[in-house]
Length: 483
Image (cartoon, rainbow, N blue to C red):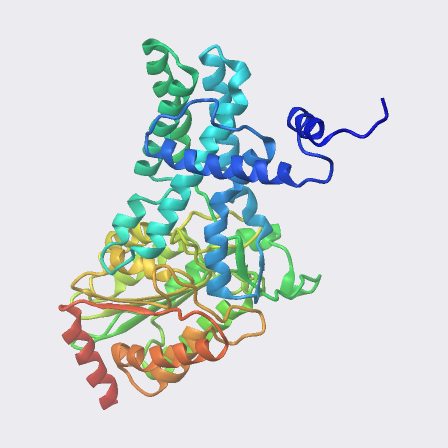
């Protein structure tokens, strides 16, 4: 009984009982199953039929497919920002919001079809399809950008837009019906459930995939006046502060081009935006004649008692006040916005614990058109601010952004006096020229050189100059030069 096995007997027993202990073929087998499921994922996303048995269901694969959609954005941000960054843990819930939606849909579809025991199969299948579509959309977004096609890329954005959501729902419905071999009536039910449970939520939720962000080096809050909370007295005083700021704006002069300055510092927890707005407003009063024609809207705890907060509401009020006193035919609005920005092109209004309406390119264009102000110079300094250019440009407008539609801008911290863009454009270029266009041409290589020296990916500031406003800006430049 204890005698050693012959070679032939050992080979038979090995075949019957699997590999001997210590063999790593189990890991290889799991990898092969995952590789096979990757292939299946592409087939399912392209509406090809796959049998249920080739799909190897495992909890670890469910986790991997659920997280794949975060990989490309994370790699892109690491490449763009470099190692001088940190995980944005507060963004994680928004980045993973697709998981509970898909989980609920897979449970509902499985039980509606009378196949509750196949819930895990559907969950993994839906996540496999989502991983392919997420990856495809993000790759298209990164590789296909060219000027004038931003709106097209927004249409294929998976973060709440229709075509990818419809693609996802149809692919999931077809896969579920094929895998579970359901009848035609139940197949119709599957498509209806996927439309309701997947298309509807994915066209209304916002997924923020900016998991790797610049180190902000925020100073900790303390109990001093500089970091006092938004108490009741200050809260009710804010309306009066805004009224005083708007009332101080004076009418323009006939026969002279007057420049009206509105500065928006959107993010409260970093002083650089407040410092930048204050410095630019002083510069414009000194060099561009905006004394009595300046409105500052700031989100910062240090200025709550003296400056109106920056919000969609206060911006609308500021634009309407300027429109009221300016000569719309000859005067020019200079609107400068500085804050953080997102990949979905939302300009950040942040002053905790307040919650503000979101400002995106469409909303900003709506506010400007509502005011009736025609001659506009608009500068947006934020990450991904190039997303504002196409929406804001027209024949009567000069639009400048601190970065391209898919690029970060740099220099945000408590210690900094200027962002990289603000330093080059305002503090250096506009101290030498009164031309906003010439200042851009001067500042752009300066910014690129600084970013290159510090190891950052170039932000690539953008500009769009309307033909109608061009002679007005030239006349303003000559007027200021003569003074």
